[in-house]
Length: 408
Image (cartoon, rainbow, N blue to C red):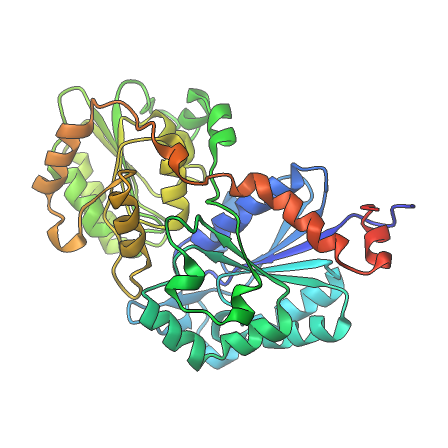
């Protein structure tokens, strides 16, 4: 068969709080472009910092005007002085136009079936009417506590949306850790679409990381010379207390500390942690690192929040880690930390009990302990599985699409 064009995939993430959704889609893009499928991938994201990440060949990103999610779960425009309804209308129009022009064979939405505030509604209807694009909903293994998820899905008519528009649901997790369908009591129609991929483990990437990669992020400072403890607080929007407590905890002799503050930390909080760190010659603070896995690999141990991507990176590395989970506006991180703590894969300190002395005690006990060797107890091969799942989707389509993608 003649190859008329490469497979085209859209990866959408709404990105209203932190960098997690975008980073997960970027991992997926890297896994797919490294495979025999050789797709063209358009990422659609609300992350202004998307340009700081190194995109693989055949991947580009449309960056939407940014939304901001408050601690109470409500949304507003992050930068533009316009109403929420105006912003959603603008974002929705940009998404639909990009999808119409790009003509994807597969559309993968991260986490939110209708997009933020329903911004995908017109795009979903367009793709449904077009009829030759397969749609996938990608879910992290834990969304929130069951009662909250059931309320949200009922209120936002997610069951109807998934049944009408989506062909498959990929859950990026291991059902032996958290059985998403069972925990949320999903209907049989929804459950029939679910496939558990395994966690998006990154062992292949870790094998290629070297010390030079890490030092490149710190011009003028060889911070990774000698033992260090790493503290990561995700996007930083609600991680200031963890960073402050880590800096004030004190470290074992001849041990350095590195804090990744995150691009969304409030300016006032950034000033405070930089001032605290300036009083400690063994402590450094950086605003942002597009590849924290480089530092995770070399750290003696890690203090972090409990976002999906961060936990996958830690589990892939086997590093000793203590998670201080976010507990609002969702309990997702708390549930994940509790489940993995029970399996002996991480440790956890609840944010209500997180103090400099609590962190100091954990660090002193763990800094010289060997890496964990027990991560083979859960499925971490999600990224390896995804190219085959994409190929299955394409093979299910009409012969004309199979021929166009060269997958006969």
